[in-house]
Amino acid sequence: MNLNQLRKQKGLSQYALAEKSGISQNYISELENEKHEATEEIIIKLCIGLEIDPNTLLGWQCKK
Image 1: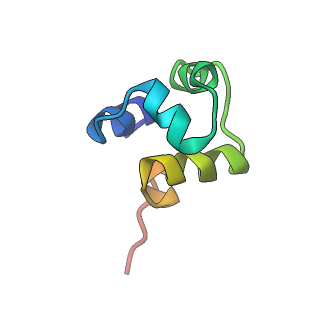
Image 2: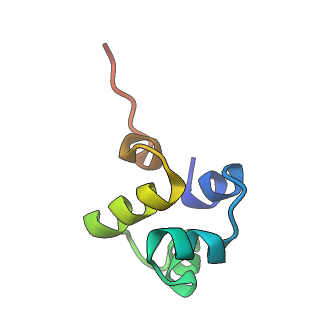
């Protein structure tokens, strides 16, 4: 899933995610439109705002 899909799945607007994560709404829009690549710091903030594990945002799956 991409950021836009995860945000919508959580029922959040870009503005609400911005408030929860401490990232500007404009920057979230640019991330969703692939105008920027997220740094490690931004990924952490997004995961806090979305209340998800970084593996979910990054699309990683750990095999046991």
